[in-house]
Length: 322
Image (cartoon, rainbow, N blue to C red; front, side, top):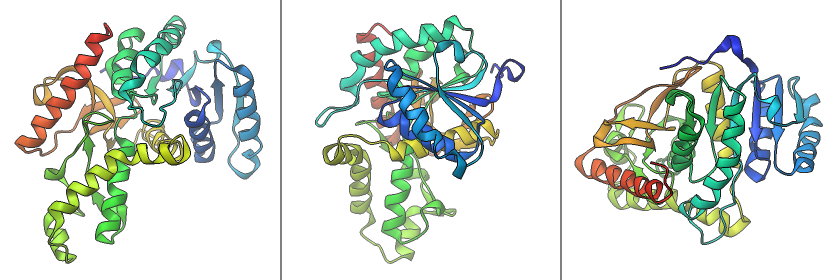
């Protein structure tokens, strides 16, 4: 693992590339976090970046001091973290996979600019399909694997915890469960390792008077998988949930928390999967991904995980990215 060159970066500086719904919401969430003292917004539409920077800056008197401004790629060199949200929007009826060709093309214009400036920090991919674009960013940037990560299924996992918290009538923060695999239609709810404060999920369900939990598990997993489609159908885009997820990942990196979260990173033989970026629990800190965390999976879950990886692998090969 190559360490983040802290002497070469400003740990209090972050760059946001892409100022659409997701980028702007992420920038606003990060401004409120107090993690950074400088934030650069970059967008192909310079006026949009300027407008967002000005708008968010007007809230700084209510938060902690931070300089927010629209910039260009020359401003990225000393930043500790670059967040890429730039990409085509997912439209109603469109899957994340449908965005592949458009967003790979966009990444081919962005990543070389980052590479040209010998960036020494961590690259956080948020644009969709995030697992595929994490692999693309890794290949195009030639950065060490641990320093190129995707937001993965951090949001999906939060959605799962939210649904389970409601079902069991407990604080969602006491629920420990992961969505793994693709951040998309082949994602898997890892029920084998799910628990509530250490109590296996099925036992906790019975303790709360739920004996039909197998059907509930299927329904909850479907709700989580389809929630983005429901939101997009109703309001055209999702951005608040992902903004909170991005802020949470930034916290783990900047504070070197070594938190375990299901970000997208490259697997090397785990569960028989090799060379594909996939969302799996990992320890995240100042150097990006420290190590993957093995969780208990049954045979069916491993089979689904391999299928998810194969789906992504086929798409990457079709786009000459493997």
